[in-house]
Amino acid sequence: MRKLKSTLVSKILCNTRAIFRILIWILVLWIGILVQTEGVEARLYIDITAPSMRRISIAIPDFKYLGNKSERPGLSSKLPGIISNDCDLSGYFRPLDKGSFIEGPNSGITRDSIRFKDWSVIGAELLLKGGYECIGQQLKVVVRLFDVFSGKQLYGKRALGSVDRARYLMHRLGNDIILTLTGHPGPFLTKMAFVGTSTGHKEIYISDYDGHNLKQITRYNTITLSPGWSPLGDRMIYTSFRSSSTVLFMHDVVKGLVNKISDRKGLNIAAAWKPNGKELALTLTISGNPDIFLIDITGKILKRLTKNWGIDVSPTFSPDGKRMAFVSNRSGSPQIYVLDLITNQIERLTFEGNYNTSPAWSKLDRIAFAGSSDGNLDIYTISPDGKDLHRVTQDQGNNEDPCWSPDGRYIAFSSNRTGGNYHIFIANANGQNQRQVTFFGRGDQLSPSWAQHSE
Image 1 (cartoon, rainbow, N blue to C red):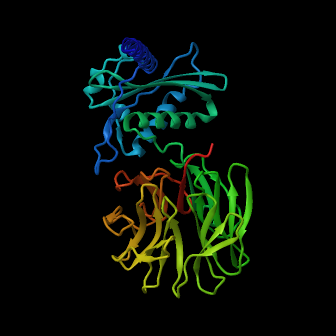
Image 2: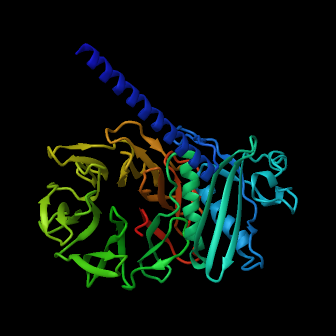
Image 3: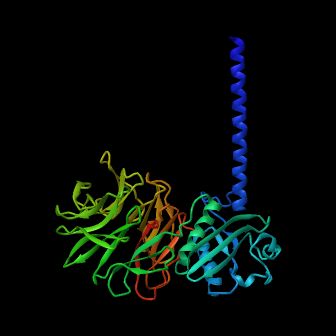
């Protein structure tokens, strides 16, 4: 019996070792295929969790035409220009001026056809090479990212799309590059909604995150305020003044349908989505005083959330939906409070400054708001426990209505720092790399809301 057991154990061990060896070979083969297919050096180059980041110098020359007959020569500079702007707005890179490039005309886009000394001598740390080909309305693009000092390829990809969606194609590739270097995708396929006054009325507009592909959503010829994207980015809420009253609308941006959600007597303002996408908080005056109520997407009241003699407005939910920040003047001046939706306990969050408003709660559990102590409004961020107050803007005009990118790594806000009109700016979450993204000649751009791409 012992001999039989010993034989069985030996066979099992042999089979186990054989299976293990097979698994190892499969793993080696799989890794080999990945390396051969991608041809990249796998490591993270940028630590986006660092409190302060040094921008990496990147060179992005014009793309080469790869077909037999040159078509759409303008794309040679347009395509890299889109990625260059993405890199600049991301805050991680410093795109180099094309005027400093010294590479020869015969330089290609593959590793063995690039003279990397031509790039290191001008201070480039990364080099993005690209090529394209047009076949009718179809656009083929290939991009390769290199470490200038080692000559290693960090990223390489081919992409196909239509010419009229070139911006989308390049944003998609830009997102992949950010993912390769940081471990997190970029914000380049996100959408922005805001209030614009270029027509003489306050209407809602949407655009790409960088201000391009502008589209007017409402044409009510009145005052329309407070756009707010749904968690999935497929619907938007806003309040419009109609016949001396306010009405809350929901706009399905995919289907183009608009539904009236709340038109109760008095105010129906400052609505905010709960993270589940099925409920909304908004301020109503049905009880006489402006208080915050919870409703479903049909407009049915589910619960009264605040009850106070003061004015309670501007709700925003925590990522888990268990808490809600809002603005109230119950202490005498507008300040931000946090309501625990489980215990119904309310605690004051802000104590510095005499005017704090427009809270926005990020996916990474941080609250941005606009505050004033000296007459000018500036953007601040704070931890939900009231600690770690950080000033984002200072001595740059008025800065209002902050909102977060879907991943919580960027802030958007409106500012009149350029003189006169308000425009939308974006910045990294720590306030670095503040950049203007709307440049419309007429009117203001206000109250931004940032959403992930819904396609």
